[in-house]
Image (cartoon, rainbow, N blue to C red; front, top):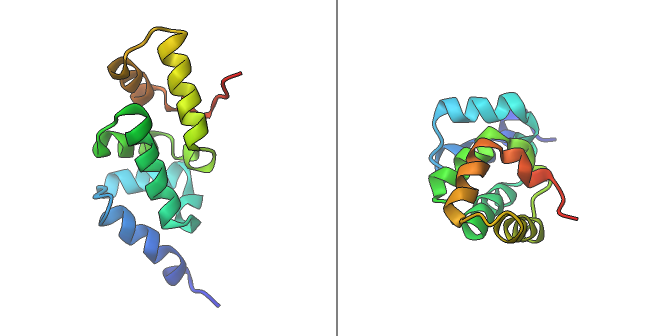
Length: 115
């Protein structure tokens, strides 16, 4: 039987350590998406890496995107990110820098499917 402490400790340690998140960022994530505590650490790390690779975010920016809309952790995939990126580049003629700027403000765009 797992205790509350043993079930959430790995994610809290990961957020504080590897991700170097401030206490205020952790609180914000938990306020909007408390289920993150039950998620696999590797899943969150993959999400941050995907944001970095697909859109050229710096690590800190990728964490900001995740913090602003942690629900993206539930439904993020390389395929979806690549489709979103291609759509924004080709259909809207946006540069990588412009896309990053938009995503930092409107993270929920990542949850929309490109048809």
